[in-house]
Length: 630
Image 1 (tube, rainbow, N blue to C red):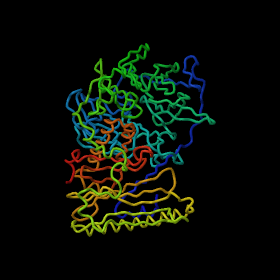
Image 2 (image 1 turned 120 degrees about the vertical axis):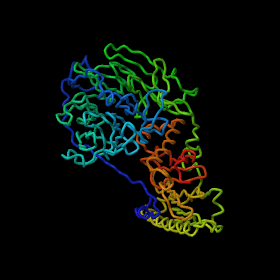
Image 3 (image 1 turned 45 degrees about the vertical axis):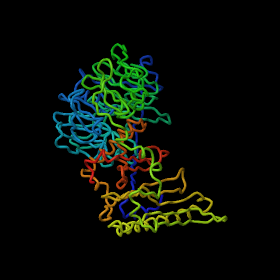
Image 4 (image 1 turned 45 degrees about the horizontal axis):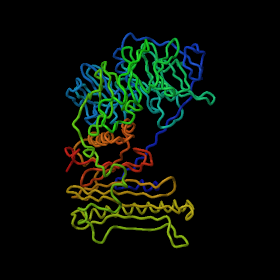
């Protein structure tokens, strides 16, 4: 999509996101399947199993409740010293606390938490707002501090150590356990001191899940034995040493949880909750997607119901079924698969002896926290109803192509444009025998008149942009020539243009873009919006529009988008939120202004699949006017 020279020369400050991270699997220990327990005592999972005794807990202590009970579902709600600490669904997803259902909710800190852990008067949390790094804040909201720059997938605290999974980072591999990097999404098992120091890679294998009883680590690895793939739960010391096989399965396992001497997990292939203990492995419940355990009871859920299962007797009790769920409207619109916690934003949580879930409440409230009152689920944290268009304007719901067409300007901008017309340029790489052209290249930019005091400066900016676009023409034509010309470049073109030229009282905003087709699956388009100070004609950045720090205004804007997606049932919301893609994949100079609000622009693949185009979201001024520099 253009030469390196083009990307280096964007002197106007257009920043292109170019991040590539790769990590790699190292050597794995030799697989020893062992003899295992008797077949009639085990699930028939296709490979031999080795079962090792697990140390017992005597009660559901603080370590289990805060670190393990809801770990597989993100642990974004916990209880300590009379307060529920949780990710609020109504306060832009901030870390909040409340004393109970219907009680006032106070914001602890304006950051989006992942897993949460409370010790004494400190709240430790994975900060989704900052690349899932470790933060700490006082329970009263004081003394917020970042403890580590390393991203974390879990927050399991044992003593003063944290155990978590993350991408491979050479700095934290002092013994060179891995010699090459692997895929970007691979995760490895690490430990870190609670203060953020002493980070160390423990296991040089890709780790799919991890749990612990405080004395040993249990982690899931996908193994390959002579081309035969299966999943192995390994056991090791807390330092990662003395590794041994604990359990193997042909099926992918998930939601590893240690509870009172046994390892519980879900076999998604069979949709079973299974228990692995000294006597062998057995089925606890069928038709299970996820579960939590408390006081000897397993609470299991699928996309239709929640049941309670006695771990000792196996007796089951149906708590609620989808067709009787309280709170859904007549269209039965809901968060996609609300009982299935495929990401950290859905599922069943056991907190302070109560069952919590998140699901769709109504079209004007979206997804809210609910708790079980013994007969039905009631709203735990309520909110004032909102219309979806209070958050995101429908005009920009899907893609840029549905917003404004190239070359159009806002009605109020016409009086400031030069009557001689726009800056226009057209050239073709080649001409066919019938006289038609191919490899067409075009540029369309505005010109300004003296109605703007900064018109000379603005026209110089446009001239500079034109020069940069012409350099892009050279790289486009070079690529066409390398491709072979007419036969291979028949549908190629490159376009530089603009849309939604808006001249407000303070700012001049222009949605500049480039796009085209030069081979591959589909045409492409790159948003490169520009913002200028109306008085000086100098370019400004997004941060110049707001009176607060970047984290605060981005959380406000993206919080509106996420809540909008809840209300309208966009099915990518959960995974996108967990990875905070609207912040993580947002580039500087990727917004423009309209008479109605600010538009956030995203590249293809940044938020959704490539077939979805280039999503944009227009957020009305009313949603952020208190922090906007008018």
